[in-house]
Length: 234
Image (cartoon, rainbow, N blue to C red; front, top):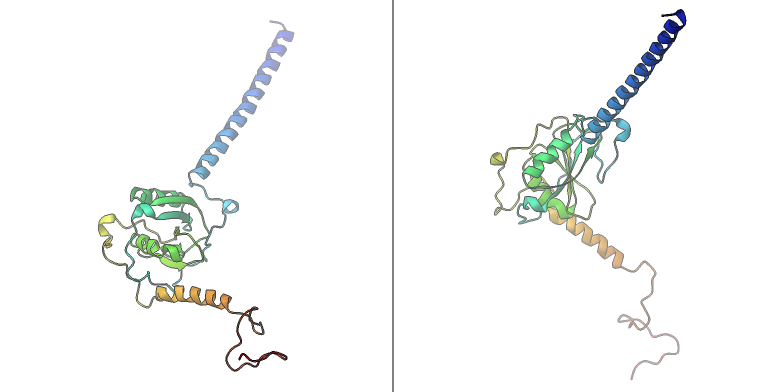
């Protein structure tokens, strides 16, 4: 073999080595990107800039808040009639999806799952007036969660799991009787106070503003004088 052939072989070997290195780096990069995408999709990876707000954004702590009692005489809601959106406020990868799966196994209807700002304690259950009985039914499985009232029209509830969340209470330990009305905690605000407040606001909106005159055709109140030029009735 001549020196020229030997040099040609060395050049080819170097080219092949460089190509192997380049393709190896590309394949490794694609593998890492694929694993990252899969981890984010399965809620096993949490990135701050992917967190988004939701219908009732929690505060940083699940401190005790004013709680409304359930409506008087309200019974527990069947699980398949309760829609729960689950949010991960614990910072533990995959916790929202795991909790959602556990709720689904109990018959609850699971809506969306997502990350949330960090919450201390067991967590929070966010609900509106129409979802009060559903919130209390769900709380039986998360007894340490704080009930948090929000202004929403539908009966869906949000479960925001906190840093001390240890999972749902086993069904055999849940003390909820479908035939027994729900009971709120000591000191809770009567649910009737909420509905009364809404009624007062609606009534205020029906009153005429100060200084408004009655509509045409309305009779003056007793004791009012007829307008100039009018004759009293015979």
